[in-house]
Amino acid sequence: MCFRSKARTLETEVLCFLFVAEEGSQRANYMQPSKIIPLIPANATPATMPGAPAAWPRNAPTSFHVLGKPSGATCNLDCTYCFFLSKEKLYPDSRFRMTDDLLEAYIHQMIESQRGPEVTIAWQGGEPTLMGLDFYKRSIEYEKKYARPGTTIQHTMQTNGILLNDAWCEFFREHDFLIGLSLDGPQTMHDTYRVDKGGAPTFHKVMRAARLLQEHRVEFNVLTTVNAANADHPLEVYRFLRDDVGTQFMQFIPIVERINENGEIGFQDGNQVSERSVTAEQWGTFLIAIFNEWIRRDVGTVFVQMFDAALASWVGVPPALCIFSETCGNALALEHNGDLYSCDHFVEPKYLLGNIKQKHMIELVASDRQRQFGLHKRDSLPKYCRECEVRFACHGECPKNRFIETPDGEPGLNYLCAGYKAFFKHIDRPMRLMTELLRRDRAPAEVMLILAAEEAQVQKAFARAGRNDPCPCGSGRKFKHCHGR
Ligand code: SF4
Ligand code: SF4
Image (cartoon, rainbow, N blue to C red):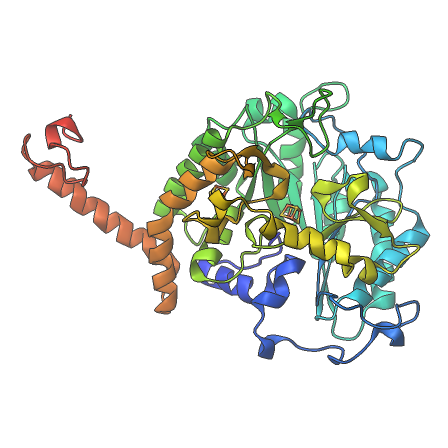
């Protein structure tokens, strides 16, 4: 995900998509060939690097993204909707701590597997701070040991913030970490599901973490899950994050918890969802309400990842979000013991590619199995999606959510389809306006002026309209039956 954007204007945000997008799977496509600074010659093989495979495997991507899970699925919270927690069952006797040997091997392989100049070391969990600060200090030492001259290493960490203190924040600041902080909105909404092991609320601890990050000038995004507790309060959530937390960068993730036929939650099977899940309609309405506020007053000052991804699609460059890409497969997950999985949402035996202690990471990433995993996103789309007018922006979203039937009974439609369809149709015109502004080398933020002027015109027309005139809004109804009521 394009966590790392340091862009402060929408124009440079789009350039971010083009040139420095964070999603490993996208970066090669964004870069124009002339912009790629080869640190190693195109014909180089990793055989020149100790411990590396004899040659770049066929299909090896130029770059890719791995979410490192050094403490596996373990966490100091007990969020009721968390699908990671159930993953502990995969490793029944494990202590869930990445060893130092494996940490070194991971950093080494990650650096030597990337052919571009940038490497992202991304930490997630469970809760990655459970590893303790020294673990990450060692990871920096290994980066220094293995980085080639000119390599830029970026660091990200997704955390619940509970353990953060001055020492953590000083470390983040020193090494320019981009932090993702999990916060589900105002107190009552956040505390509905985000509780600790004793069931106690966590809102104040997370807010404390946000303030600490701000005091230490650590760059952070807020990641908000959209669930049954907050889905009907989009503006309250958005304004809280913008005005009370003071964050400019937001990510919204829909909670879709599938229940399988045994009543279990946590793996990608079953076509029922839990009561905590958001409905497709709620999801669409949530996004539309926030978009309506953002497009009128916050373009260029608040960055909502989903809106940025949508703009990329309208502009015609691949979005920096795998869920909206045509194919995927370049965003993998590394478990605490070196097991590499196709994706963080598919940490399941069926999607285990191998262990990086036995096989170099690049061979697993370039394997036919992983390639097929990524192509499946496109090739498994039902006809309903293939013919959909907003397919260019949606691409059927993530395969993990494709478990309902199309209106004509074909399986494989996305559970959130109705919401996405409504959202993408709703934003079409403003997205076209911003795309046109970009083409004319003007700031997309000007869209706010255009829309304000249009709305002023409509208001004037309302003021002049007679009761039996056609409504100026264009509905085709009489004014008295429409806005004149
Ligand atoms: S399965 Fe979903 S989350 Fe995973 S890489 Fe593909 S689109 Fe992204
Ligand atoms: S909006 Fe629905 S039909 Fe269209 S591509 Fe997305 S999931 Fe498929």
